[in-house]
Length: 295
Length: 288
Image: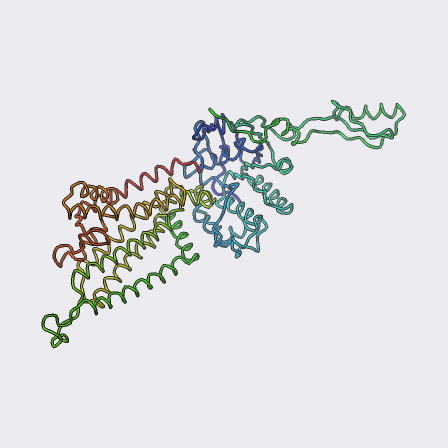
C-alpha cells in the first residue's frame, strides 16, 4: 500500500477561502480554510446540509468552487496530477452491477494508471475484508460489501489524499472495525485522509483532528483532545454518587481526601471529560439541516 | 487515447453483458428476412413477365423490379436503417452523462486522471462502435437483397452506406450532447424528436418543391442545415438511384432525395465539432 513516487512536502489537501454558491443562490460554503497533512486523519463533522459533501466534492474536482483555492498534494484541483493524487469514495455511488469486484478494481487501476496488477487488487480486497470476493458480481453484493469495495477502489493507484464521504454508513460493527484499521494503516503510510461522517464515535476514535462545519463555515478545527475538555470529577462514596463541576484531574486527590476527612467511604473516583458529541452539539446548536441560505 | 478506449471498452462490455448486441443482431436479422420476403413478393407481383411480348418470351427476360418500385423499397430500407441505427445510438447514449451521474455511476470514473472529456469521448466511441457498423451492415444487407432478390442494382451503394453510417454517428453525438444537458428521459425524447423533425422537414421541403412553394422549400433547407444527419440521409436516397435517371424518391414516403454535395459533408464535420465542443465545454463546467 506504499504510495508511489517520492513523498511530497506539500499538504495532502489544502483549502483556502473556499466558497461555493449554487445556481439559484444557495450558499453551501462561505470561506472554508482547511488543511490535511500527509499522514493525517481529519474528521469532517456537521449536520445535514452543512456543506460537508460539497466540500468533499470540490476537493476531488466534481464540483467547481465559486471562490478560493484548492490544492491537492500541491497541484490545483482538477488537474491530472491532482486527480492522480486523489482517492475518493462518494456518499452515493454505484459500480456497474454486472462487473465482478476484481473487474471493478481492474477498471479503476487502468484509469488511475496503476501498474500494481492483480497483486494490488488482491491487496486492496484483503485490506477491506473482501479477500474471497474478487469473483463476486457487484449486483450480488450487500450494501456493506459494495461500500467496502468502494473504499478499496479509492485506495488504488497510491493516492496522497483519500476523501471518504460517509464510508461506514452501511457497515456493521465488524466492517467498521476493518475500516478503522485501514485508516490507521493509511496514516502510518503517510496518506492524508479526510473522513466525512455522522458517526461521532468513529471519528473520535480514529481521527487526529476534527473539523466541524456548520452553515458552510468551519466552526471548530482541532485535535479531539483539545476540543473536549474537563467536565468535573465524579465521586462515588457511601453517601452516593456526586459530580463536582469545574474540578479537573489535579483536583481529584484533594476531593478524595476531603471526603475521607468528612467520614465518607470512597468507592470510586472518575475524572470526566466532555465527549466529541458534547462538543459537536454545542458547536452545531440547534442546527439539524443547515447550509440553506438565500442570497 | 488509451483512457478513451478503456471507457469505450467498458461500454461495449456492458452492451454485451446486458444483451444489447444479441437483441440487435436478432432484430436486424428479422428485419432483413422480412425485407427479403417483401422484395421477393414485389419482384413476383410487380414485374410483368415478358411484358408486351407476352409470356412466350418471359423466360428470356431477366426478372427485375422496376426502378421506381426499387427506389421506394430502398427508401424503406434506408429509413429503417436510419431509424433503427438512431434508436440504438440514442439508447446507448441518452443516459451516458446526467443519467449515470444521477445513478452515481459516473463520479467514480470522473475523479480518475483521464477526466471528463475523455470519459465523454469514450461514451461516444462506444455508441458509434456499435451503431455505425450496425447501420453499415444493415444498409449493405438491404441493397444486397435488392440486388440478388429483386434484380435491381442500386447505385453508389458503398458511398450511401458510409453516409448513412455517418448520419447515425451524428445522431449518437447529438444524443450524447443532450445527455450532458438533460436528464435521460428528456434527452432521449429530445433526440428522437430531432430525428423525427428532420424527416418532417425533409418531406415539407419536397412538398414545397413539388408545389413550387419557396417557404416550404426553405424550411426543408433550414432543417437539413440544422440537422445535417438529415441532409446526409437525403443524399443517401439520392445516391441509391442517382445512376438510373432523375432521383426516384423525390417525394417518397420515407423522405425526399436531395443531392448534398461536398459542402454538406464539410458542414456535417463542422457541426459535429461544434456540438462536441459545446458538450465538452458544458460538461467541464458542470457540478456533479
